[in-house]
Length: 304
Image 1 (cartoon, rainbow, N blue to C red):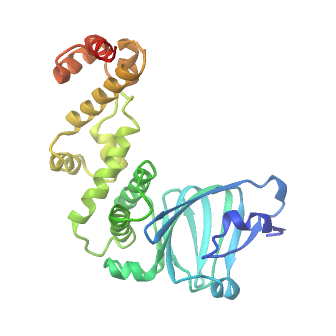
Image 2 (image 1 turned 30 degrees about the vertical axis):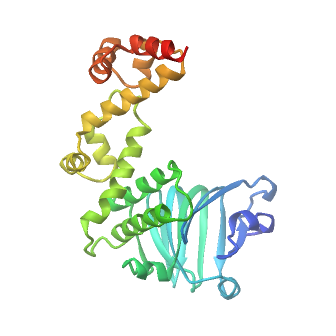
Image 3 (image 1 turned 90 degrees about the vertical axis):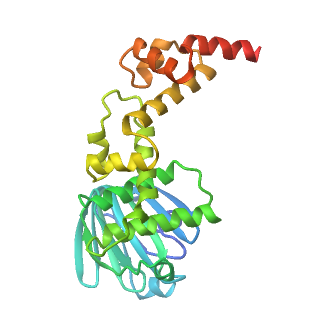
């Protein structure tokens, strides 16, 4: 590390969890780019960072300046990062996760363009919810619970959850249950505790891929590290089936577009994953009792 990154301190280093930062060797500091987004869920902070190559260290000075006692779950979303604490060093790739502690020296080096997500958790909170994690070896992204954790965090990104209040506390607790399951997979965890988070992650996956006509239960199950049978049970617990929920979501999107836009029925069939216009007509009539065209005309007649 050669170039100072002082100008980036306000972006890359949190005031409650400071780092001594350096731009990577041979890199023009003026060309360095980084983006950081922070989101609070009650007393847990989620920090997303995307940057070019750089690194950081936490020594006695940074530890003394830390406001609180934290465990930090660090997940590499893309790229390659080398992270070290207590004499150990880990090479983390996309999907890998590691826990480190704020009261001991640590260091990292981002190799090339890297995107990470860190969950900054007050240590007392983990004990309050019965998930007393400690720092340890990283967990590979192929572990099913890590799939579930990252999917749930992506779902939270797309959900307008306030930073405080009962909903934020519930979202935070579900997240910490998943962290516990992902990073301590040998420790028993009540499967029922995972269901709300698992459903949120699966539903978000569907909502962002409704236009794909080839979307299958096998793909969705694999993306969340579970079997097709487990996925089927999850949908049954919600009172439906994979096919039925997927169809209802697509019909709902078609209905929204009929009411708010001028796209043809043929275009809507292509947009929302139906085989063809006839397929959309049959499914829409079964749900609403009229064809898409008739539905649009009735709405416009009512509005006028």
